[in-house]
Amino acid sequence: MTQTITVIRGDGIGPEIMDATLRVLDAMNVGLQYEFADAGLVALEKQGELLPAATLESIRTNRIALKSPLTTPVGEGFSSINVELRKRFDLYANVRPAKSFPNTKSRFPSGVDLVTVRENTEGAYIGEGQSLSEDGETAVLQQKVTRRGSERIVRYAFELARRTGRKKVTVVHKANILKSTSGLFLRTARTVAQEYSDIECNEMIVDNCCMQLVMRPEQFDIIVTTNLFGDIISDLCAGLVGGLGLAPGANIGTDAAIFEAVHGTAPDIAGQGKANPCALLLGAAQMLDHLAMPEQAERLRKAVISTLEAKDSLTPDLGGSGTTDTFADAIIRRL
Image (cartoon, rainbow, N blue to C red; front, side, top):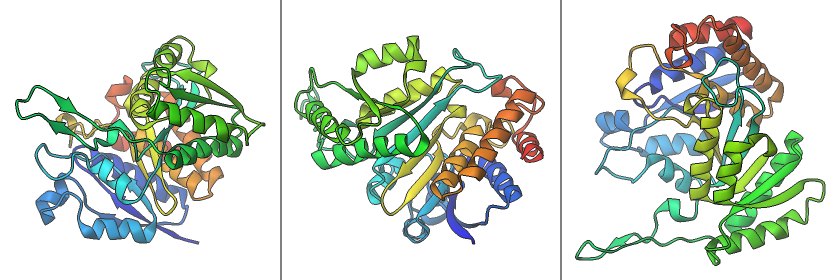
C-alpha cells in the first residue's frame, strides 16, 4: 500500500533538511510517494505567488504534507504562510512534543517528555481585527475564542492522552484576568474533562506554567492551551531540551495534516551542509504515527536517538563536525 504526500522543500536550509529526511524515509521503505510543491520565496520567484493554487490543491488531494521552513517576506502577501495554511485547511490542532535527547546542549538532558497541544485557528495569534489610530498612538487587536474551537482542541488533547498512554492533561489559561476569552476556554475544558475520568486533569495559569516548566518540567505530560499561549509555551519547551533544532510540529485537522520542522529557514547557513535535520525527521515520525505506522515512527525515533548517542555524525549546532548528509547517513545505518 502506498501513500502520496505533498512535499514542500521550503526556503533557506529547507531543501537540505528535506532531502536528508526523504532519503531516510526511502531507506525505511514505508510506501511513500512524493508530490513536490512550492511555497514561500521559491514559489514567489517561480510563480509570482507565495502560496500557489497548485500547492493548495496538492495538499487538498493528498491530505498529508511534509513541509520545510518557509519565508514570508515583509510586505508581501500573507502575514504568515503558516497561519494561512492553518486557516485554509482548518488545521486546528498544533501538536509539539518536547523530549530530552542525549548529547544535546540542554538544561535538561533527561526527564522531559511532554506534548504541547495548541489551538491553531483562533485567539490573539491569528491577528484578527487589527487597527491603528490615525495618529498612530493607539493600536487595537481583537481576540476571538469560541466554545466549538475550545472543545475540539481540549478533546483532541484527551484523546491523544488515551491513544498514547499518557496520564495527565494540564489546561493552561489566564482566566483570572481574561475572564471572557480565557474564561470560556477554561469552562469548556472543565466540561470536556468530565468525559475522561481515566485521565488526570489539572489547571494552571499561564505565567505559573512557564515558571513550573523551567523549574520542574517532569511534572507535565500533555499541556493544552490557546493559540498565543501555546506558541510561547511550545518554544519554551523546545528550549528545555536543546532548542528548535530538535522540535518537530504537526498541524492536524479533520481533512488534512501538515508536518514540519518548526524552526526558521536559517539563510546564514543555507547551502553549507551544516543544517541539523532532526526536527524535520522527528516531524516525519509524527507523520508516520498519523498514517497508522507507529512501529515505523518509533523505529525512526530510535535511529535518531542512537545517532545522537553515538556522537559520530553530529552537526555543528550539536557540537559535532558532521554535515546534514552524514547525519542522515548515520541514521540510515542505524534503522
